Amino acid sequence: MLVIAVTLVVTGVANAGAIVIALVCTAMMAFMMMGMGHGDGRDAPDNAHGLDGHEEHDRRGR
Image 1: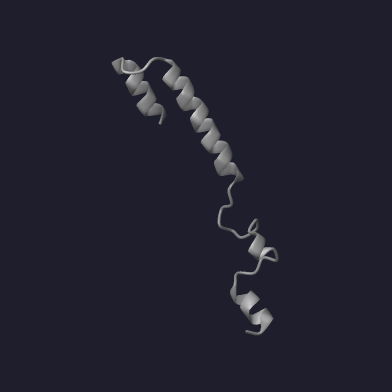
Image 2: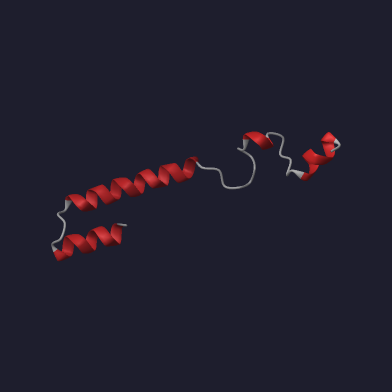
């Protein structure tokens, strides 16, 4: 995103504000990514006890 913004500014298609917008957007995406789960199951509400699904199935006896 930043490379595209810089390219547009260098070629004269966009003004320098495009770089600022691209930086803010990149920072926002980084903060959103930090808040997301990473597939380890620690923050999933259905997996509050760290079970991977098989144990849950066995524990319920179904």
